[in-house]
Length: 206
Image (cartoon, rainbow, N blue to C red; front, side, top):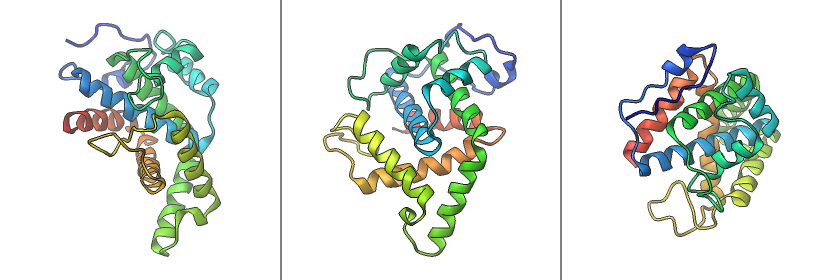
């Protein structure tokens, strides 16, 4: 049964765009938590946004009941099963929805940069050149890889059924570029619904 807790927001229609037919089971919710943290990690790596910017987004969306301060934000992100020292905070469905809205709000604010990065990636791909050859993409990939290796469990990988080995640099680059393309869609007007549905679909197929 879905939680009855709902944030007070001036945009109830945005909240309504995040439907939930049934409550995710613990495994599905773990996957949603992991994917949300990875999307936010990619956004951080590209835009260099701070926790203060994330909290300001929560305030803009009137979601401070769910994401009140830096400690609350840190605990939500630490709930990802990929994180080092994870398990300190359980994320419920309403908190996951709040993070979806925050991520897409920030992605819209940085849409021009996201578009430029994706356009560079397309250009280099057409020229059979490596993404690292563009400074913007090289910095993004370095930032993402370094942050992932610093924050995630050494034996955890988002792309392996058996998470007993750390992902390689190539795997992390592939993941980072996939997330970059996803961010372009999440920065669109219907981005929050697109992200939410992607999270639900992925959690059911894992």
